[in-house]
Image 1 (cartoon, rainbow, N blue to C red):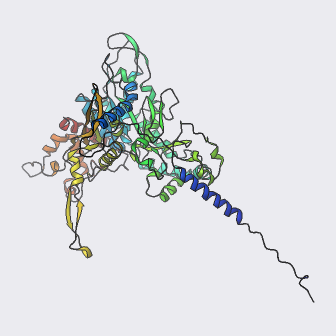
Image 2: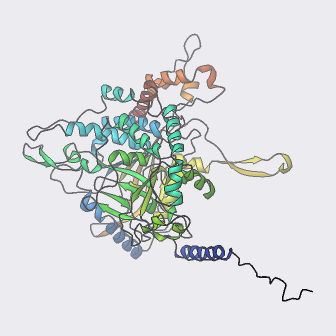
Image 3: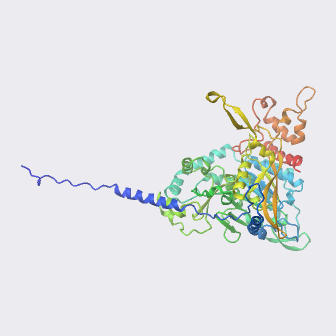
Length: 594
């Protein structure tokens, strides 16, 4: 008979789950502690502001204090930027005339070039102090400065070269011949290259969190910009535009000059967007912390600080800055964090990581940590303490390029809006309007456009809600009859002759648009066919001919003509299409800009 002593003793098995449970608890604690700390950026206001829009005059002491703060905010610009584009031997002054070129791909580039040509003939461009650009507007900006740089580099000290005619028919036709910018084949090749590099992206940026730029399409996109708009000048730097060399001055004496002072050119600004990780403080909602500028004199923004030329090497060349400014196809703009993660995992990011010039204390040793441990390191975050700064399309923050001019208190700002807007809803205008109210406590007002937002009507609903009325916006439709509208931005308290005054900036809003009524309701000949005389008087024969080619008379009544609001996805233009946009911009300025 077997006794209990003879029976095998039961030994409980040791669980192998407890290490994983402990690790999960540690990760949870680390995540909670990391989340409590929050994103780190400069939160102190370093730009000009107005006073709250309460409808009543601000107290005198409040205005005086704000005016003093605005003077301090403008001090760097006064000491470094104001000396450009001024008459010889004149004291530096605040910028009086500025131009903002919006995003919109090659559509915006062609239209902006036409606008610049018109402003040149009216004498406005020669008096312009600053040109700010975003995305496609940057293509036009790069082309404009490269054409001047080619002449400037061939000058000798004993000769004074006249300012080149960059808008000559030969120059514009040569550019139009390269307007097959990014074809569908280029797009397909870029997407395929990104897909092939997915394993590299997953290992470097997923498994190890290296923040490497693994998207081949961005490099391919940059090369097309260089070929089309920069005459193969891939190595030009923004600093080259202000680099001094020996040259002959206007009075005949030999001295030093730079491209900007030699031809009296405006100071260029290329705007990108600095992506900031989201947290409870919503730092990424303020333009001062997300609009990231590149100029010949410095780069940066209020959130990450600025680096002046000579302090550190520029992280991007001129072409790279233009390419990043137009990096619209980026996973960071997808709705929801889930789609953003999937988009990044599929390597569909055209943005670009640059080294964080703030030299964070944590260093880059976190990059040896595998997923998910590096997620809890301060140096991995996209903020001032992270080792890298992620930049994407400037339009992701502000697509008109006007914010950089407002913070410089430019007295008159011409905003060139060539974004895709087939319904003329002015989305970027109203976004900028809301941002200036929130960030600077000032009001952007263009009455002709403000009516779009206030146009409401009452609609009787149907179905189960029949008999109930609701307020709905009235869409302006597919036409816009005011291509140039006047507006203002204000008010900013400033110090003037030891007194405090209120400054209101003037705005000229130039909209890519066509008044279709000129094509539909114009005069006819004896046989009843339209002559398009009114349209030709407004837009020129080239624009009208292209419009009629793209939109025959028999189709205009059944479907709206896509010109001039072709989708930004279309980045390959024929010579006729490119020149039609140039001519449209030119004619709008010549006929409507006062």
